[in-house]
Length: 297
Image 1: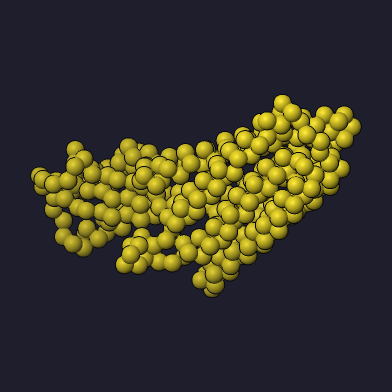
Image 2: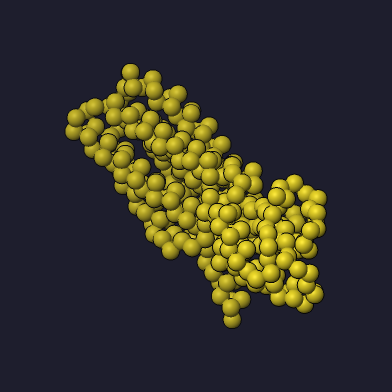
């Protein structure tokens, strides 16, 4: 029964992401055409943003399935880290798109062009509706993929709310400079979030210690276990921000028979599970045994 629940939960996640993807991609095409029709660089810039989100959704959908594949000869840890590849690809697309939008929008700050504020207003209403539906679909996000997707969709709703307000102001005041101002604001907002995501992704790719894990705390907790005198050559990294791996050398106070070592290893793994370590490789050392690796102190 537990297996079926997990199976249904996985398909629920994939279904939510796929629906959000098709909604987002369809509207991206609509707003790109609408942006050209209304001569609004703000709407075109949001179309570029939404295209990036569509790519993110597609990659999330694909990697949600791919990450379920287990260990292979080529990828001994499985496919979990492929989700980071998707994040990098999406970040590159968004950076290129945002830079292009800035090169188009900045000149318009100095020579604003006439825009169709009524068309912008109608597109903004449709944008809030479609992205709102997609965001509601993802409101019960449980996986990392879903939470990231949900955040993207919420950003889209807020972006369209800004376009809605801007188009209303332009309609009543004829201040067409608001359009490129909105465009620059959206592009800068996207770039800020892209660099924030890259800042979170790079340490994982470079096998840095997860930010929510303290090595010294873990060493202290393990040293509390009976028959353990020292912990060294400790390494902690994450595959995908949610699956953490640890390797360590554990020095014993005295030699122990294999049966006792198995029991001790179970205790160690229990402690590590509470510290958000999902996969642990433990090497035992007897007293006075010389460690041949670096970081053995």
